[in-house]
Image 1 (cartoon, rainbow, N blue to C red):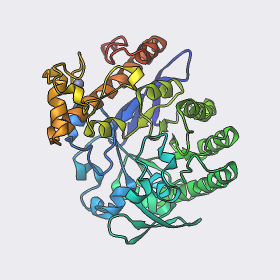
Image 2: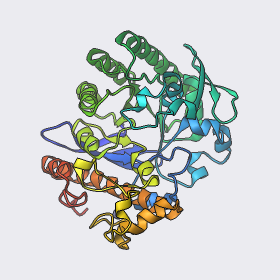
Image 3: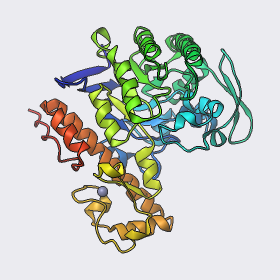
Length: 409
Ligand SMILES: [Zn+2]
């Protein structure tokens, strides 16, 4: 049985709404997946994430492998028990972090990551067919991750969805390199599946990762190869281009070859989560997204607001908010807005590095993104996606742009 049940399709785009079934329950799609990189959604308790409406979080293989170690986490009964989250978890393969060290941070540009990527992560010693050796950023010790290691780590973590180990190419590499790298990623896919078939948890879903960079033929070819490989789902990774329009084009190429017999394979777009990208991604047929943006912005004093010309952001650290008595936004159900806490107060909390400020803004931002996704899902189910997409792009408040879902009988 396919993992994704499609409940409704949009008539004009590739958008679909459905339910993704995992060993730890259902994920209502399309969905945003908050990052629990180091076994916690930073600053939040599991029930708070759940109460915001999120079904799934993303754990990071690379970081958890280095500290506290996947075997130690297995000793605690796996990542769900370790972090107290009894709902679906997806883990990445570690490929993105490992290759960010080697390729520099160029791949990070479109994804909004810091420019110091490789210093923060460690240093690559060698990239070979076998896998990647690198120096740990924690203690300088030599570590190795290859396809089998990555699957082993994710088996120990016990995630509901694991990703195969891939080479994540940055934007600046040429077509020739991209082609060779994509071929290696496909060989690694075979090795990941062989390992998982023999040793992996039977109820863990495997997602292959589409590569091919920004080259149409390579991207389509890679997506076709991985779709035919027999994995439960598909993630779209690697270089998605240097600007949004190019990213949409790359995603369009990938999902264009995923119809027919591959229709029921869930599709995850890696590392993308700005409001306009979520709307477009859903239209292009993406089911799940993950991104550091809402949580990281929150920790740095930036709140999400329905203002497209400002990239849906307001930087509350600015001095002009010192005496601003208004809440972050009207009609938001998050604690900060519901209590009517002022922008002036939140600015002060953020400025003085008070944990409460980081927490409140993280919760506000996750509440904002969840309402965007809820609106998109409700609209697909109601057959009104075009109106909702137009409203969200135009700066309407999420939570107001779609008809309420039908009451279950
Ligand atoms: Zn709020």
